[in-house]
Length: 162
Length: 130
Picture 1 (cartoon, rainbow over the protein chains, first blue to last red):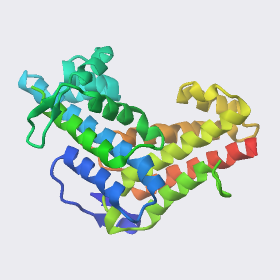
Picture 2 (spheres, rainbow over the protein chains, first blue to last red; picture 1 turned 90 degrees about the vertical axis):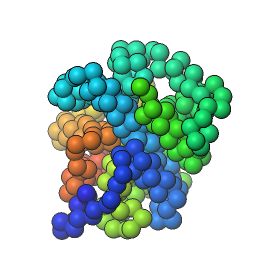
Picture 3 (cartoon, chains in turn brown, red; picture 1 turned 180 degrees about the vertical axis):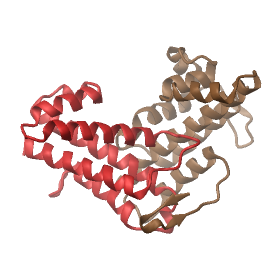
């Protein structure tokens, strides 16, 4: 739900936050109403939010399954809101292992459209993570479609973590 | 500085403003996050441009440190309060840029208020280096 001037309310049907944010990223990249410069400045921020949402979902599911309370889990997420500790929590269940994040991403395989592994080179994951980390502060000079695709693969890989 | 008459910071902020003012089916629902991201970039570009003219290297410091320095460097009576408000706006924009599962996106009024602070910073920093 968003609210415009004079209390005009916009309501959208949404599935899950990760898909919604990635759909938004693609909509921004494709819309004719926005100059390309604007899309290049905005899309990385949507991709980062999608990866953040995937990390939160993974951490929440794992911690709740271990018997932690909702309060504890939300408190943990709130105090690790920055991307590095958040993804470390998602990957290792340990927010302090930020130095291991890139090594773990490098080991992420490539998957086909049905989620089957294709290779063991996670450079795409490193590229997506790097843009998600710094991209929201600047204009992304690369191709937006592949950024969105790689962010989606990264988000899905994180969602699939046990 | 862009090739035209407008600076990059002003162009980015104008793009954010258009998202606030013009409803469109293509940007329905996504315009608050897009506006947040653009406003924060406009603020950061204004700071970066200012430091590149006035004190190269300061842009590498933390954003908090940059706002503290800005209050001193801008030789205007209202510089320190402006720097404080700008830091608050930057922090609010940064919070809004992250994903928060239980929070509504910022309202148009909140975004318009942050936009005004960013414009004040753009104007003050441009007076400093032009």
